[in-house]
Image 1: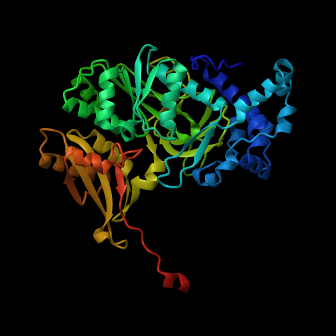
Image 2: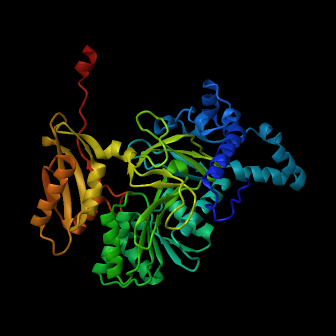
Image 3: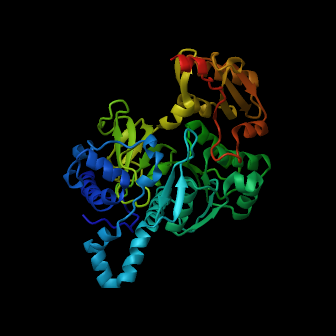
Length: 494
């Protein structure tokens, strides 16, 4: 099967065709591009006695070791660095040189392999890890961005505004390349850190965009400020969100704010992406605002779901940890990368009942366990608490305009018990005492613990707490617990 990578219709082939093609493409990609040119995977495959041409099924592929974030201590080892002598012997390169001349063949190889763009992980739990892109990768970014536009039912005459922070991070650049790939107007403001809230609102006033793209919390903040200042934005059709989880309660509040601004038919669309994939996947949202999952690009990447404890593949439709392998990337490449994220609804290949596409879908909610390990899961008074659940609970709670969970130690003593402090801003007209009772009750029902203290703030104070317009990602879970200081005498005695 020959794939036409330039076409936006990536989704009409049946599952069995895609699966057969993916294994064939994977085998060729590993043999011709990854193993010869990746220092890390060249060593890994040799150590485990694996040859790419021996991978003839998904079962064969499942024996290849995983890659995780801790393996990326030396990012250079994961960059494809071609050996010029090997490339010159390739039939494709020889044919290219004969057909177009040596200079043109060299230029084509440069476009395929020379890094020209860098993005990085956010580095909250560890040092940021750089991921390099070549021109070849940017073409893939155009393609995956175009698919976001198609899934969101955008049109070329629409005006789009990218409110992601200007930074070397995937979200900003994917939105930028979505505009390039789709061939539409895309104004990138740089978010709150660049123009501030007022600057973004003034530009939206002038442009009157059809689509806003950005972080959920910042989009909410901008819409709310605009509503409070009496703005009328009657042209909005989509709010496209990335970088954070999007609970149903937050979606509803965003739709309510858009309606109050004069755009009653707005649809909220989330995306799921991560730096290591060098792409994001669009959510398919129906007219009823129901989500039908995230459409994948089976020609650009292979997605597996595994049991996070055993590492074994799970059947289609079962919850599992998302594992990603690119099928056409250059620059930085990671194979069988364990994201630490759980797709609660599993991976399915059934035809989408909303749009009719046949490409595979990840069904949510998607729990970002990689973030949970850092901020959202810890032992509090002997109870293991999943703060991911609390995020959805607080986002869904009517009457809350903004919130932050703060973790402290009693008396700031590293050896004391943990404390949970909840910072809230109430919606206008909502009694703080009523909200306190409702939140405390639901908090306890979800986790069997109750916040040590609730603190109510103005919305302006909460914006400062969250770092809106100051941080790349709003700090919804703030871990302010001091770390124990090692006792040097104990260390010596042990």
